[in-house]
Length: 457
Image (cartoon, rainbow, N blue to C red; front, side, top):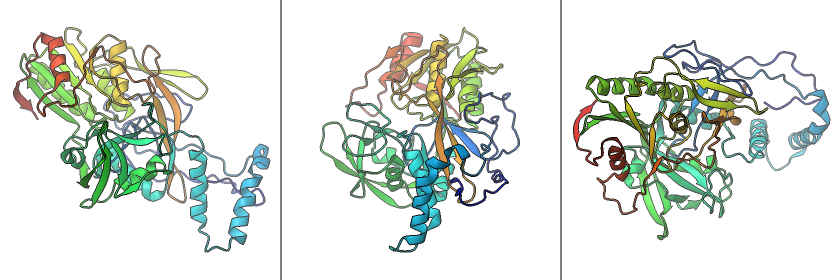
């Protein structure tokens, strides 16, 4: 919401909280406030909408990850008296446009949305952005793990390899973090590390990340032609038919040597319980060696990350949140995890597609000495954003409100988490080869055999 015109009386009553929209289990979290996790498996009443998240920028239908519900910030309407002078140029511009613009009809809502978007974009933070009501509605689909699009997480990358640039152009390109398992993007052959330089023949120069992703995502059954550059090869075109993407988050297998393997593709509200069920099956079968596969996992709810890490850590700090004032608040493990016994050996697989909530889990297990990390350096997303729904026009913005730190108080942003056992994956890898999983099995049992004995539902 924009500040009121100082020449008009301010509404003495703040706008009401928006109608509840979701039923989630986290406790409220507000900017610059500590994150206090609730007891496990407790469901709270629906809360007024505002969402804090840890997320990578995503393709498909802007699938976001790392949500936690919180209360809407209480905002006093009107321009603060101490800032009235600073807002004079804004109101001069607004009144001049609405009263004197002769180029066509003025859409007041569009003006307001543009002003809010400009404020957020001026921060230069790729993880803070404004969404119109339509864009916001589309993005909310991803909270449940279902959306319409191609099903590929994407980030931005500069020529030096650093990720997180904001305006696309020669020095900032869309890069595929990972296609979702079984998605149209994966079926079409899109790979992690591919650069997407155009959609339907139109380049992205000058667009924000959200603007570029708008061109990639779209309704089920429609086709998008992506121009892709892979390594040093010439660009080529991949045609991908969009679909409704329902991400299956937990897959489980029992590998030779009685090694329990669980792959986690996201951190939704239900993923922690699903993961616990699969781990329990392996433990009931006598498994004392577990592999948790977080490769290509873009993240999810902060509370899901806490609950999943707590399955392996009985107590102690999992991560810290550092707010804008530098204050740090610890999030501790939830008691009652089913695989906290140190006699259960744990290996965690990570790669450049493991981000945000995946990194919270991997960082906690590594710093606390509970697991051996095998694979490649993770994505490097160490900030927390909060969604703020705007009353009236129906849009929303997300704003970076905190950093998260590992138990050793390491900020992994842009650097990622380095594995304990690094594995280089060759580009010409056969489809059925998995050197990272092979190396994990060697760490666990001294053998690279990974024949599947049975599958767990």
